[in-house]
Amino acid sequence: MLTRRFLLGRTRDALSEEERRVIEQSMSGVRTIPARTCVTRRGEPIHQSIMLLDGFMCRYLDDREGYRQLVSIQVPGDFVDLHGFPLKRLDHDVVTLGVCTVAVYEHRTLAEIQATYPRLTRWLWFSTLLDAAIHREWIFRLGRLGAEGRVAHLFCEMNARLEMVELAADGRFSLPATQADLAEACGITGVHVNRVLRLMRERELATFRAGEVRILDRKRLAALAEFDPIYLYGQHSSWIADAREGSAA
Image (cartoon, rainbow, N blue to C red):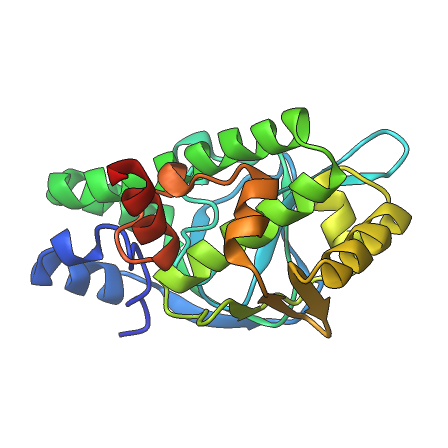
């Protein structure tokens, strides 16, 4: 199944066979999009939504001077712009970080699903609520953590999310981002990101080289990030298991 990562590690097991079939067969097509390509522009009317099958995408806003702020990073299995179905336009741009493969869903098809499959509609709604929960945590990260904590939190989150969709193991995962992307996601300068990454490497917390993150000391990195994965609503992740063990203790 091309869409097998949708809600994987969360409530995928709760979907019925029919619901999985509908998600798989309702796409109007599959597209491959080059790296660093703007997929949706802020304010433009949209009539389709996309599920990310492979690769990484991000949402961002530009200020008046052209400085960019990343407001989310999307991973395989995410319905990138499902909220565009009722809104009919987005208040941000969507761009690919690396080469991406996406499944395309026409809004008229989503309307048919909404009318015919109320339980599946709730799962689609759940996926948009996950986006909202992640956005709230990003606000916390930017508002309450220092530069090191912000980068650490981003690495912890990406590792947990990618573990859920079986794209991370043993603290290693691909992230086709530049140091400039990390700066824009964490609200700091590129120079500051470089300094933070050097400190993390020297302290044997994590490394970031050639688009690959390697977490060396998860407990210390999570402590620096004040990372609690509860907002990810996951079921299958070592980070979730650690959090449950900590709560039990």
